[in-house]
Image (tube, rainbow, N blue to C red; front, side):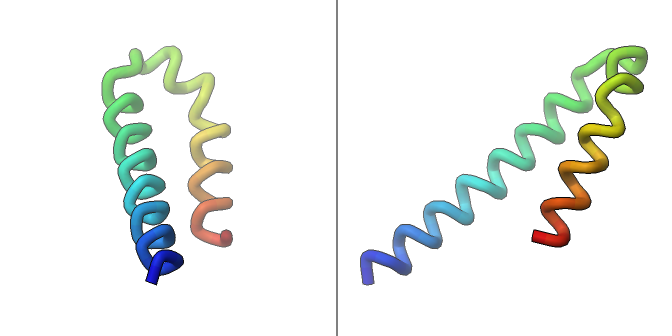
Length: 50
């Protein structure tokens, strides 16, 4: 029972962290966003594969 609770809380935390990254991305200036776009695409591709 405790393991399921741990996995549920962990998954919720990860999804919330990804949403927070999306909100921060909207607040970043376009010039700076161009610099970190490749990193963000790599992170999202890894998340989809992982």
